[in-house]
Image 1 (cartoon, helix red, strand yellow):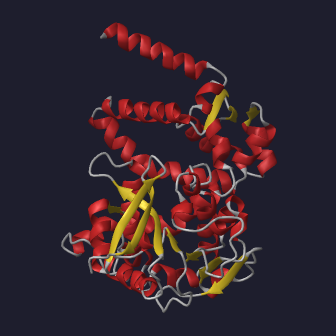
Image 2 (cartoon, one colour):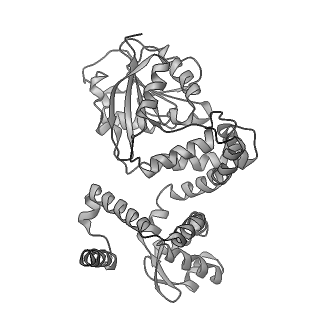
Image 3 (cartoon, helix red, strand yellow):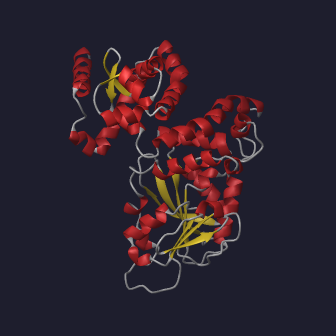
Length: 397
């Protein structure tokens, strides 16, 4: 055992000593993720009680420092210089106090956000570059300004409610944390910067993940032949935001131009114009105006709402469906065991913010059966559990 541990440790130290991770590891994403997960699990198994309480107690500081360094332009400055830089140099460029810069960077180096190259000398790491990637600073803003207070309020909220599962979107840890009676979406309307950064982050958070269109057999549910001239709408993206999925669909299947509809609220769609896409103002709580479309698509919509509200959303679509129509639900499906940390974290985020949830397959079955739908097909397309659920009218009803 000692020899195995020693050789494993030597291998990891050699990997860390290199200037960069080998290219073959970056190109083999499955192996990269396996190594990442294994390192996390080994790290946790090596903890003693003091290690655990200190790690958990100081976790919020990592998020705070990630945001502070972005606000100070410290991370961008390090990346732009792309070399070892002194604290005095960085303080001068960013217009910040040198003592503060020292303290921020000393902490950042201790948690891997930057590399320490000598006394008061630092250079960017891969994490530094990650933190200034498009949309990442918006993600830190969203996490702190929108989510942190509800997360902190969650223990008190659950204690107050007798540890009952939340089901009222206007009675959650979000209302307690932000001292408001408003639903989060109503609160966003009064906080334009908060919704803007949330939207910016949502647009990029899955940019490097596998795409559903590369895994799902769209042709099984929609005629994508180039000589098809039928007038039936092929694809309705309900609550589709700025239309990124419509754009992706037409890049893959340009022959569907003119048969794709993007729907969302008026304030969301303001200024949105997409060639080949009909942009339509629509509230998915109301009657669906597009009748008999081949596909009605819901991406990350139902996880925002508790079951009774989801039933209303789905019922509006069902009323518009023809016998050939299907609903594609693009959402997480939690496995019976071994759920990914991202999926379980998002589940508790939905509970804290909107009294909603990520769902297991039995929970999806139950929700859909309640409105007369059955699952025709399920296609998982990421290791986190992102899946396409094909829902159709239950012929037994």
